[in-house]
Amino acid sequence: MNKRLIIAIDGPAGSGKSTVAKRIAVRLGIPYIDTGAMYRALTLRVLQKRISLTDTRALVRLSKTTSIALQGSHPERQRVLLDGADVTREIRTPELTQKVFYVAQVPKVRREMVRKQRTLGEKCGAVMEGRDIGTVVFPDADYKFYLTASSSVRAMRRYRELIQTGHSASRREVLADLKRRDKTDLERKEGPLRRAKDAFWVPTTSLTISQVVDKILQIIRTHSAKNPKVSGSFTLNSV
Ligand code: DC
Image (tube, rainbow, N blue to C red; front, side, top):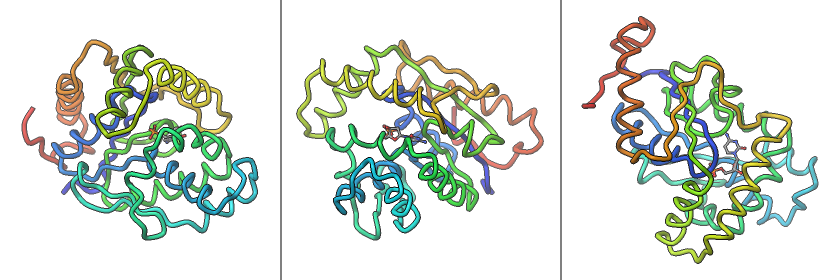
């Protein structure tokens, strides 16, 4: 049951992907994979090793020798392990967030990360969230969703998240940082943020998280009835 069902959820920072993807994974009873956490963990390793963020060859080498694991079956309690050490909290600091793009823009690093992500997803299926899941990592995913929201709403969500997790932040800085991240995500040569042609577009500006989750589950339920590949392969707890 539930084997190899891949649900790709892509979108820009603050579009609600993580919260939505976690809830969908719980509702469908399949693993949740946060690919952003993997890029974050690798960036932390680069900083710990005092490697220059512009030393492309060293970044590629490190991407191949670093072990990144996601531990724990419940998405809300999932831990990110970097060479065995729990870095779940450390990878969320605003300082680290600003540096991830150096690592994420290197094509050979991305290819290594995509390889790791495919291995994880192919094992037992996943709700996988990121920027290039529907376009690069799993172009033949069973379902693809592309979440968007206005930049001001996304910045407000990020700001609240930071404050709630005990970080200090200014709304202006959060918005400026978000716009910088949008630019690097969109302009990256390899694996840029794009909506896959066959992805369902879900604008979330005026929707609550529960509404987005219900909308996505509704789409999956409707289409699974028509799609023999996935029909009957999983059970929705309730919609
Ligand atoms: O989703 P997030 O904010 O945790 O992502 C952290 C960074 O990783 C962000 O700069 C975009 C990058 N990323 C990426 O390039 N490709 C992915 N599949 C996921 C994240």
